[in-house]
Structures are given as C-alpha cells and as structure tokens.
Image (cartoon, rainbow, N blue to C red; front, side, top):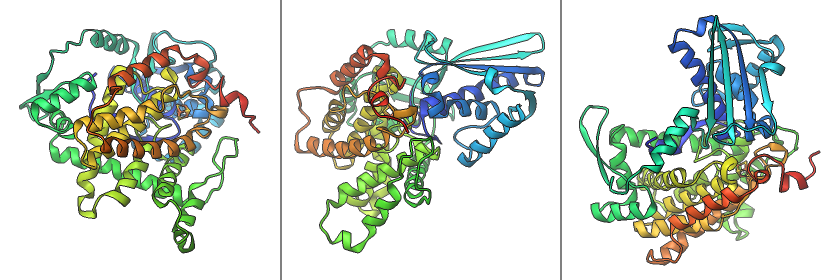
Length: 475
Ligand code: SF4
C-alpha cells in the first residue's frame, strides 16, 4: 500500500479512528462490494462479528454504532455526526436496517452484531467478520482496522506483509503514471535515514520531497487545496470545542468539558494581564477542544488517529498564532502537514499507529513526533533538525500504554493530547538549538517503539483491562 500525506490526515468522526472510523469504512466497503457484484438486492440477512480490541472497547468507542451506520451506506467523511444517534436508535427500535440506504432487511442487534470478547482473529487485534446471505449465496469478508481509519481485508494484510519483507533499498526513484497519464518520478524512502539521504541527493526539504511524490495522484494546486481543507476542519473543530454549551461528555464517566471554560478565561482581559504562560495555555486549550469534540463523536481530522487527533491541530494553531506572519500562514500549514505526513509514513511503515497493536506510544507518540517535525520545518529546520525533532517527540513517549477508562477515549486521552502538544513544541525548539546531529536516530526510536509494543501485554493495548482502566473506579 503506497502511502501519501492524505492517508495520514483524513476527515471523519469521533471518538476513534481504529474503532469508529475503521469499522464504519469496513461495513460500507462490504455493502459497496455487494452492490458491485449485483447481490445487494438479494440480501436477506447480514451478521457482523467484532473481535479482539474492537470487542473489548467497542461499546465505549462506538464501534457497534459505526458498523450500523456503515452498513446503512454512510461514509465517515461526509456523514453529519448528528445523524448517528437517531439512525442507530431507529435500527435498534424498529429492528430493521436500510442496507446501503436502499434495501430494508430484518436486523436483530443482539444476535446480528456480536462482540466476541477475548477472541481474536489472526491478522491484527482489531478484527471484523461480516457475512451476508444473498439468496443461495453466502458472502463473508474478514477485515482489519489497522489504525488511523485504515481498513484492509485479510488478503490485503497478507499481501502488505509480503511486500514489506521484499522491499529493496535500491528502489530510490520510481516512474509512475500521474492521473493525467504523464510519467512522474517518485522518490522512494523506507526509513528516516533514506529520507534524509534522498533529501540531500535531490537538494529538497522533506516537504518538497513529499510534494514530488504527491504529484502522481494530484496537481500541486489540488494538493494545496486538500491540505488547506484539512486545516479548515481542524480550525472548525477547535471552534466547536471552545463554544459547546453542554458541560459533560457522553459515555457515563461524567467527564467535564474544559475547553469552553478555559477559552473564556484566556480571553478575559484580567487574566491576560496576570502574566500567565500565554502560549502554553493556548496550546492546552486547542488540544482539549479537539479531543473533547472527538470524545463526543464530533467532526474530526484523524491525525494520524482520533485518540491523538488534538496534537497536530494544537501545534498548528500555536504556529499560526505565535510563530508565522499572517501572509505566510497557508504556506506554513502546507509545509507543516507535508513534513508531518512524511514522518507519519515512517511510523505506519516501520512500526504502527494503532493503540491496539503497540499501545498509546503508537498514537500519541507518533502524533507528537509528526507535530514536532512539522513545526521544526516551519521554524526553518534542516531535514536533519526535523528528523531530530521527530525523534525527541517520540523518544519521550516510548512505553506509553493504552488504558482508556471505561473504554472511552476520554481519560487519559484528552489531557494526554495537551501534554504531548507542549512536548512537541519543546522537541522542535530543542532540535532548532542543535545542528541536527544527535545520539539516537529516529529509525532507532521507531524500532524501539515497535519492539516495546510487541512486548507489551495485551491488557495495555486498547482493551481496558489494565492500567488506569482498572484502577480508576467508574461511577
Ligand atoms: S490511551 Fe492513547 S491510544 Fe489509548 S485510546 Fe487513549 S489516546 Fe488512544
């Protein structure tokens, strides 16, 4: 699977990319396949099984609702988040499903959608089986939600693993056809070391190298438009989070929304004059606002996951408010996101961005490193300094477990994003004080994350069976 920057930043809904967006996409993909094969109108029954981490924290993460919404033909990118509740309520009360938005079938939520607690499918901790009976035919697909909203079938997962094992380092430049049918040279890299080497060889920054590779699928103007649209959704998300009137987040933990109150406080003239740590307070606010929106199922940019979705917008807002001039702002956003995307690709390719696979280090650690790299690039860092910033951003998140209380993406997730956002800014600043040379490379830190994740017990990997999830009493 060739990855581009827009694979790392996609528009969806909360609260989880792997547990909400992924299952919704898998269900929609299944329905689309039925339609393509001309089988949709013959379907009489659909049954879905969720396995592993999807079952363990599926209720708290809204995985069951996401499946129903996906089977009903909705896409997370275009779905209005306010539609989810009524739609799910209707399926449950009428016990009927509008498959693909067209065919009405019987659906018994208790037996047709089953969370198989403590059972796993072989490919990944986030497994799904979807089965449809269409006349005499039975169609069954095994899907995996592998983090960041990515969904693959069992066959694609196996093919991806084979491809990863046969990647040759000599694949440095590859000719590919653009959408317009022209030949375009892409600049391949599998590791951070290779990325730096390619930047040196071609005399490009990391953002420029990424832009070259993106030309295979879209023009520079289209890319810029897409990235600025991502930024617009991030800003809207922060605005929504700061202006909500509801005081408590859904889910039963009774977690208070803090962003609206903090926003009012920071705008208060008396508080401004008190000499508080201004920039840091605003960074906290931006991250809290995004993650509170995520926790309540709002419109979110997956960056690179939903659980860690507050870090990159918080650092971008910091950059926009405290670093760049207004007339430079859009250029800086594009540079930031392209650079962060390159770093995200390294994580996805060489370790994981899935909390169910490697713990929270894969989500918050990856996002922190990506944000640090993006900011460092905008501050004028060389590719070596950018790599250094990303490494610092990851190194101090290594070993972070995933233990969401009540299976909800709230505690520790929301606050953790604020802390990691500040950490990312500090990482970028530290890297800017150096010349790019440093002791631990980003590749070594990513490999350490992969190994640490492999050694981590499953109770610390998005199952809510360990850590804070068992030591904090739900009430
Ligand atoms: S603890 Fe981290 S990985 Fe787990 S759900 Fe929260 S943000 Fe995601």
